[in-house]
Length: 318
Ligand code: TXA
Ligand code: MG
Image 1: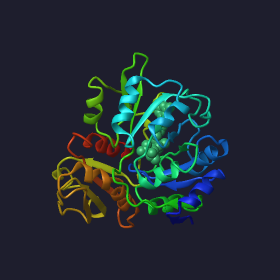
Image 2: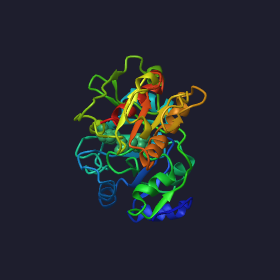
Image 3: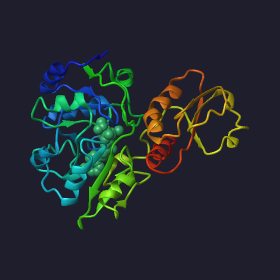
Image 4: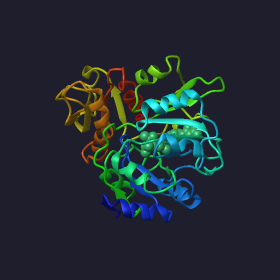
């Protein structure tokens, strides 16, 4: 199994030798390798069993590094970066030759982000390369929000997991790209809410596909799924007569309905932030529970981070 700890020097040395390791971010844990090394990038795809057509995003230490790897940077992108980095926002920009084609699956654009986690920022500041890092889960499964989640699924394939505690946001970053006219486009809802995005670009376009999308391959339908069947509901009355209620695990938004065998409540204080932070961990608990054969999950209010939570819930059903 992987060693779990906070040894930044060791992480630095492993990454410099083209090893891949687990790293914490504020959104979810990443499976990180030197983005400028073909060997390291190949290892990431291998460990994650990720198809090579699904590009990786690059984590950089500050907005100042962007010029080193991006071919052009629209003014609007700089505004976004200024406002939200470090933070849960990935910007898709034309890349230059520094970033290997392997990282971007041959696309001429690359996703960049400055993560907001003190340990990972410390690590990024200790060397000169960006870290390519997808979420540290096997392809298609729920993203990890603790070092233990990473250990459980990838621990036998990687040497080290940098332990940064539980992720404070709990949802992957919001992905924003730019079209020819310079308009911004949201490709993936995530840890930065649309309301925040609209403060920078009130006319932002939204292109969130349900299935494979050539521009954002990450929006593949099969993403973020637990192994067990999951059914979404709004009102508890929808479940009352379900034949599998006895074997179910109910994940509800803010109210414990005391129905079914097992249940967890995402937030006790009607907080969408708290719900987002707990979502993936609770889905994992339900998925790993031996007596559970079906998961019932309640949709959350469709505002703020609730839009991204409901998006993940929907994807979890496919
Ligand atoms: O919060 C996050 O973004 C986490 C943490 C670790 O930073 N990372 C993450 O990576 O969620 P990943 O690989 O699981 O999801 C990134 C998504 C991928 O689904 C990929 O398809 C999309 O971003 N993506 C990457 N590069 C792209 C590009 N050039 N154009 C369009 N989509 C891109
Ligand atoms: Mg992922």
